[in-house]
Length: 459
Image (cartoon, rainbow, N blue to C red; front, side, top):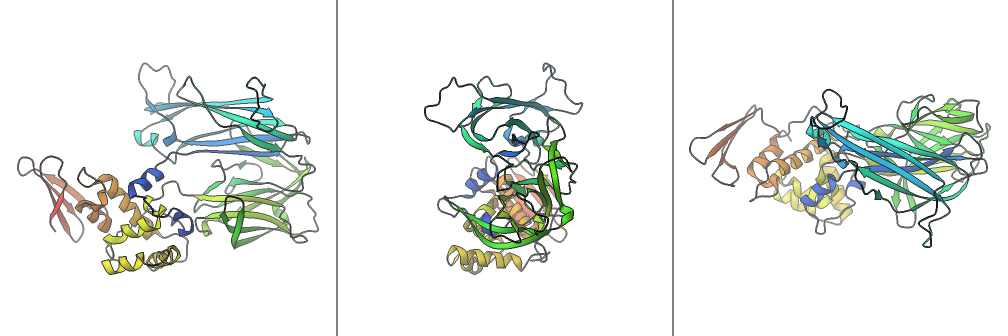
């Protein structure tokens, strides 16, 4: 595959087990591109033991990607104190109301909430591209202490000081009695954090694919004579339950990772950081490093077990998340179709034959043979290829050819990557000549008048 020029940036390979969950049907590349571009608003409700052993702390932790937020360009008329280099700003407010009991169809609108909390902030960015980013975001938390029992809540979101808040549906949540509960909890923590400064991952039950993280586990009925381990399995989620399909990692928990008679303490009033306070509480925690960079992109079940029992003492479902996934990798049939630029018709026909599992196996085998780092879960070459496909789709589409990858410039870009130089000339009225130069070859494209596209006329 000498045609490829790899980017110096390291990209990750998403596992086919998750990325091809959506089958072809009537799906088009445009559908997938729109799906991949959907802005994200992550929200998770978690409960930790409160400072008072008879209470629990309910956290709503959230992350709004910049692509989710509406931004406005700053002007001299805006009465906003902005950083020196800021060009755009956005305003967001999120508040919650919590009510006693389960959601009921007979609930009255005038029932008073038992708790309210409010978060609001103004965000500033320097460039237009920053306003569309999925890697930059606003984040925070709402928190309240509650007695054990059933509650329901509603969230209200306002963007850019909207007069009408966007209300969520009411949801039930249970505040357990931690002192009596036989089931522990698992919290997702950013990697390489010490017990004195733990930061919750604010993407719901998602973790970034290819990045390690930590699991903070409350161990119920801890016994120093027991040994404990964390089992990580690939999982399949059905409508009614979750099934573990393959054990991928067992992590033994040693005594240095266990904190007995401890409590969790918030570090500030805005962020989702806290510390484990040793010898100042009634609970036992374990802090375990999870080598997520070793795993394929998939859905996983994390389970805590002890040496003496078969029962699971704590469990959490975790999903991998790839923010800028090349859209073709969301659908097996379309991913195979997009390989037509680098394989023969016979090879392409062979890749398309068989049931989904057989096609997936052949697709994986094709790219595994060309993986420049076969000892890792990353396949930079495959990812770079499908990124080129998407770049061509966006940059070279025309009214005549809405799929930019099917244009002459799109195909050349997919095969050879960005040219070393790109020049335009205008030899006569209505005509444009574009010349792409690479190290060992040159391509010449010609465009007629109007909305016609560039055609390859020389190489």
